[in-house]
Length: 140
Image (cartoon, rainbow, N blue to C red; front, side):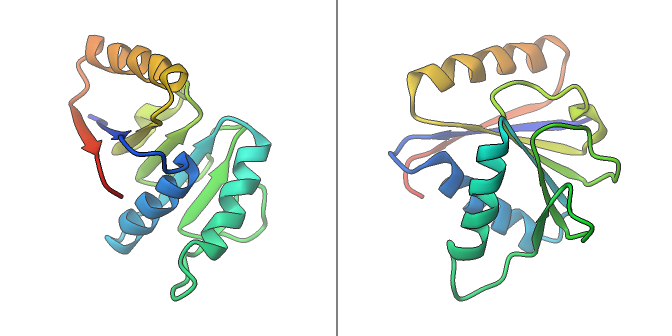
């Protein structure tokens, strides 16, 4: 069964910056990652940030529409055809394909408006019996 982890950001860090750090950490643990964003703009912004957020190391990634295959794929519009074991959900809504993954990471921004959708996502997962862990990220 898919494990769900919520990462509640308690600082003013940009959620995409936090996502870069989380993606980097999960990748370094040996996982394949699909990042699902809410828009093309967010997908492009995350793609750019992953090139620059840590200049001292490379985070291999590519847009899902790219011909290149990388261990980290970024998409906003469709279900991934290749299975990757971790889904990082930045869309605010639960993707219909989430249960294909071994693990889902839900990033909960500090903004109250974003937290409302995270609460709904939490209720959805909990009502269906998914194992859930909640992490308050006070310092990043």
